Length: 443
Image (tube, helix red, strand yellow):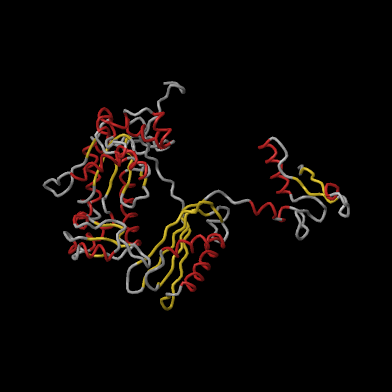
């Protein structure tokens, strides 16, 4: 064939990586942290478990089905939960253990498929499967193959996994969720759910509205309007939903009809910045904790891999005295590279959920970065003559080069003057308009 008629050969593991995978496989663990606790301590199998929150006011963060049958719910005080279920076992939160298990699962999934996307929920993962039938066979065989890979980690943990296979992440998640009430097979595992493209609309129509990835308030309003299933939602006019719920109404209708297919996109993992400090003796005073945190922030911001980028995602963790761990994971609304701003942001989170006991070490991780912060460069004299103290001018009377460049870009972007200089004309004049004047900054 000629040069223009040559057909590009795609490898089954790299086909579609650039744009994402349309067909998705969702692997989901209901109560992921509780399943990990059972896998770590088999004696807890069959007993009512719950994990309380950290902090001074302890409430139930997560409870199993056995605890729920006794009336234990998330957000309930620990004392109330124990009164309802005296046999309730409280598992101390161990976020380091949960995150390490999550990373091991991600490593297995990435070895099986290069298109893997993790969600905010620790126990929910999406795997792109476009083209994998050439390696693993039909969708049913693919899920069996992936289950066998995961069993190398823990057969007890994999028994609690739910698998859903459908077009798009939303439908795959709904398929995995719909298998939650299914009866286990003879091997003790819940059968996976496969939804082909032809059956997508009918499958989604039978699902409850609480599967929609919208706010709980919107779900509550829909249920009050008598819309309990997605087939009722699809009969609503789009204009009416948009007028009531805005963009969420349009998105919910597209999800319910199966017309919106969210692709599984491979994650581009940034290399995190890690800093840690060990204490000779465990510390329990927040003042010492904050001082150590500020030192770690200074060290992390000077790391060569971080230079030139602002910070958005920060995680701090600590090993607690007498075992266990504590951590906080936070996303800053405005990326920054200033120590005082990051310190104030993290302190506001620590006050809400302080370490429950003295800490033996402290770890800091920058895991998400923003664009390069160039604001301080406007006043940086390195690329020009030394500037006059307290002024934007150099000793030659010219503005700093970076400031001139910013003024030119703003004028091109806005189409009009954006920055002005204040010129002193007649400071002693009795008329205010004669004392100073504004002159456009021109590069």
